[in-house]
Structure formats: C-alpha cells, structure tokens
Length: 344
Image (cartoon, rainbow, N blue to C red; front, side, top):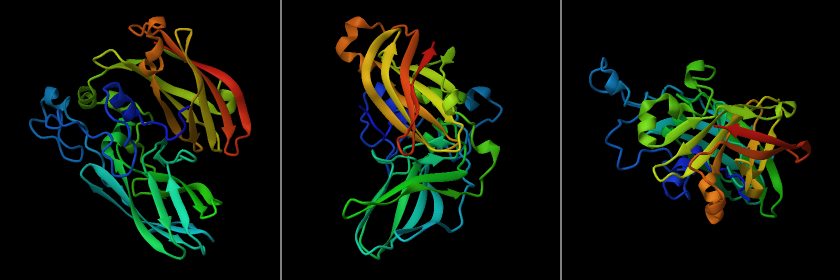
C-alpha cells in the first residue's frame, strides 16, 4: 500500500524517467525545476520572456511568468492551549515561494509539529491539494521557533496555478507521550486571494504551455471519457491523462474535486488495465479539504505490471479502472466501494 504522502504529479513523470523520488514535495527541494539538460532552453518563470514578442515560435517555447504579487500581512493562524502559529511573510526567491511561520509551544512538554506526513496530509495551494509545504519540527516547552516552508513555482504551474492566493496547511501536533494535541487545517490568504486569473482550475496547466510540454518530453493523451458513480458522495471527475515517456513507460493521472463542505478521505485500490487486474489491494489514500481538487497522480502502470509484463501490453492502453472508497475525517464510511474507469 502506498499511503499519503501521495507522490506529486511531477514526481510521477520523473519516475517515468528513472529519477529519484525521495525529495519530491519536500521543503527545500526543487520539485518541478528544469533539469540541467534543459535549463538553458527556457528562462526562469518569474522573468519576462526575451526576444521578439511578435515571434509566435519563440513565444511557444516560453513559460508564462508566475505572478509574484501574492504577499501576506502578519497573520495569526492558530492560537490555542497547545500551539500558536503566525504567518510572518511570503517571499519569492529562485523560482521558489517561501512562507515563514513562527511557531510557539504553549504546553509544558515537548511537541512534534508537522505537516504533509503519512498520518495526515491536507496541504493545499489555492484550490488544489498538494504535498508541498512540508514541515517537521520538535519544539521544547514554552519555546518559539521560526520555520520556512518552500513551494516550487514550477510545480505550482504544473498544477495549473499562475499565482498564490491561499496556502493551506494540514497541521498535526503530538506531545512527548504521543498524544495528539492538535489536528486541523490552517490557512493564510495573500493579496491575490479571489482573483480568477491565478488558477486555471485544473492540474493540467502543463498542457496549456508548449514550454512545459517541451520540458517534460512526454506524449500526453487526454482521456476520452471518465465513468464513475462518485457524485452521491460529493466527488466529481475533472480530467485524466495518460503519459508515456521515450522508453514507453506509462502513468495515469486522474483529477477529482470534493464538492462537499467536509474533508473527505479517498481510498484507491484494485487497479485494472484493459479489464485485467494489475494491482490488488490498497494503493493510495488522499485527504481532500472541502471544495478542493486533488490528483490521483501515482498510477505508474509500468511499475504495477513489471513482474507480470507477459500478461499486459501497455503499447496501447484502452482503459484503466480502479476501486474508490470514501470516508470522512474520522474514518466513517461514506462510500463503501465504487469503480472509476478512464478510457483513452
């Protein structure tokens, strides 16, 4: 079983090329940054494109600049008997956004304060759930620390974002007796909050930009249909894609949205390819905040069938099916089991 942390979309495409996944989505990593072999081909996102603006050929190779106007005022995000968390500032450096937090332990014992962990991962940027925004700190009684959380602007744009309007953090804190003293989502809004232009509303932002298509170097096929019966549980399917690298390895990514007013936990299991079971059992678990979209982004088909390749022909994938079950934040069943099928 692969539980959250769920691998980010970019990690999945990097996995297709054999790259290491260990740092994906973590603080200080450069997830979504261009590789050394292509860095010179495309200018940084935060800079204006150079050259003749009338040249369509040149424009097609330039990623749109990321809107860096999203800043914050000092904001108290949490203040209770256990923790005080204050958002101090949001800065942009080297195609990264850095959120500075001050965290105070209000208890008489040590606290472990964390986000984006296997036990609880509920971070988001704008309307999209992400593993970016990782934090892990041990804080002695009564002390305050200042921590910096990093977000790759390349990764954000790959998820369809063009600026930062809101940052959500799923925070969990436990004491030295391993008792949970806080678990919940805190949010800070920026000066761009509410502007439609900063979020395309889909993770497929890389498809909208020829520069990203060139950078990734993969064949991308959009789904012809997505069949499911998740609506009664408050989920809807937005899009799905099949990615193929130069070696013919394939991955599927499915984007869903939580249309309810409650956090949902989405369980994916039993993945089939063209009607044949490729993986049996639990695969991923995703926490989805109310009103947010998320991506089932680590369906690495080639890895699933690696030890049974003689039974699968991935040269032409017709459809991929998976079983979806949904629980609430307390693990009470909302939807016991439903099948989602993506056709290409």
